[in-house]
Length: 91
Image (cartoon, rainbow, N blue to C red; front, side, top):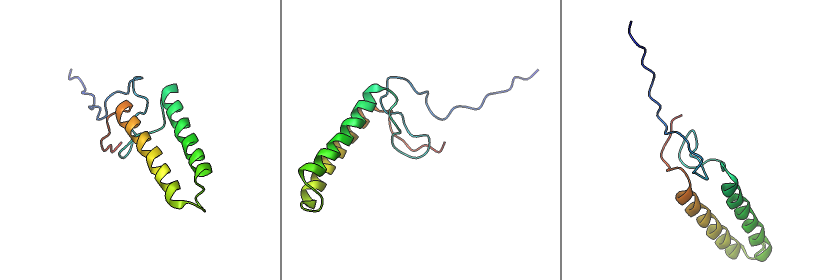
């Protein structure tokens, strides 16, 4: 009898070593997969709250945007270093 071939898997298996797994569709990262990633995400959200307190968007929009871009850049660096390698995924 002929053996049936299984279709190849297009996405690499996800391991627990990644803090941020890749999204199933599109490019980038999804929600954190362990406590380290959750801690980073909560820290990012706290930085956004502190930025809105330190430089209220209504009074100092330039300062507020600078702090938001800085915090977002730091989050992206952590995602790049500790997340699954990004690439376009069709699902």
